[in-house]
Every structure is written in C-alpha cells, then in structure tokens.
Length: 275
Ligand code: DGL
Image (cartoon, rainbow, N blue to C red; front, side, top):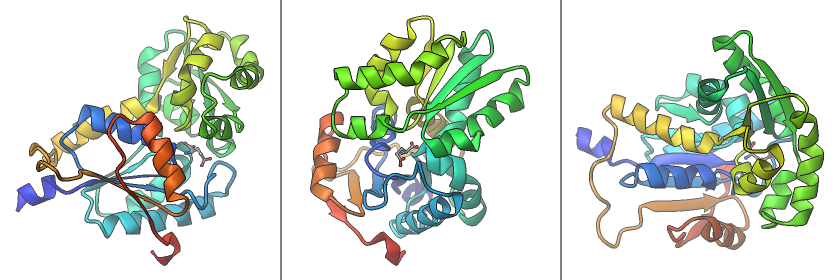
C-alpha cells in the first residue's frame, strides 16, 4: 500500500514555462520521481494579477493535479507561492511546497552583511513575502526588492545572452549595485535562465540565489521525512514526465526542449477552467 504512494507522481505547476527551471532541478536531484507538470500558458503572466485571481487559478490547477493522484504539489511559481500557498495549504490534504521559503532560507544562510536584494515580478515584490520570511529569522536584515517585468518576455523570446537583455538588466539592477547587497535572490522562475547576465552585472561579490535549486533540495528532504521518496526506477520505456498546458502545446514543447536535457516527448492541452 505504502509502495503505491511513494510511486505516485509529484505535481508541479507554474503560470507557464518558467516552472520548468524547478522541474529540471527535481529531475536532476531526485531522478526516480515521476512528475506531472502543468503550465498555465493561456493565462500567463500571473505577475501582474491580483491575489484573488492568482488564488483561484492555483486552486483549479491543484484540483487538476490531484485528479492525477499526485502525492505532493510543488508551486513552482514565485507569484503563486507568494499569494496562493497559504490557501492551498489550508485546503489540500497533500503536502505543498512553494519556491519562496526555500529561496529565503538559502539567502539567510549566505548573506554576511544582512543586505539582500530580491528581484521578481511586480506581484511578488509587492507582496513583500521574501522580506517577511527573511526578517522573521534575522530582524536586522535589510531587503531591497526590485520588480523586473521585462525579464519574463525576454527569456521567453530566448534572448538569454542578448545585448538587449543586458541593457535592460543594467537599468533594473543599477540601483541594487549601489546598495551594498551581498546576496541577490532570483525571485522569479525565469531568471535562472539569464543568471550569467545578472551575475556579470552584479559582480562576483554578490551571491545569486536560485530558489529552484533550493526547492528541489527541500522537496527531497520533505519526501524523505514523510517516507514518500520513490526508490523504484521508472520502468524501461515508460515516460516518467507528463506535461500539460492550457494553450500553445507546441510552443511549450519547443521551449521545454531548449532548457531540459530530458526530452519532453509530448505536451497535452487541457481546459483548466473545467477544474
Ligand atoms: N512564474 C512567474 C513567477 O515566478 C513569472 C511569470 C508570470 O508573471 O507569470 O513569478
């Protein structure tokens, strides 16, 4: 009986393609796990929407993932983690992990001077959630948030190393450079893909925190503690990763294959409003 639960998939969702940076970390760090991924490509971006809307969307997606009998849900979107995680935790019986707390925890571990920068969507920065988590532990910490809304479309256009991205990044990040931060949280799923541009501008004295990486570590730990970690290799020829979107399946597949070494074989479109 217990065996069955361990072999159940992990549900992972995001407003679109960004959460794939989290999914690929999970694939790297716990390769025996099966994943059902949902990207809300019809309703992206979440970063400029209200708490009510983001929560409603997240509840629908959670219901969809639960219909696939997932053993846990990873909210692989900073914006949804900032606004909907509390509600999902109250409503659902399966354990839920967001990306914000693991990122904040790692920033706390890395910062020496307590001056931490956070970049993300307007909604994530406006929520003040990273500040709240960090200052809960270190009250003298100073958090500087900066919304970088143009990064998401630049990443989705594949302009990861482009001079245009560098120019925009310089404009966004220049105010953080003068603030003496020693740690910068990449508080949006897309930003790890332009990590090298951000790192070049911030300089080597600033530690970049990738919440996607930290989330996969925390997920593994949580599954272990609850005896939910799968130790059975996926059957030969089976496809352990299933991808679903609310629109543009072909475009999603192309993007996914450009960032993941595990081939995204098929992506299905579903009508998320039905859930
Ligand atoms: N996935 C979102 C996040 O991490 C970025 C894209 C969006 O605005 O929906 O905040």
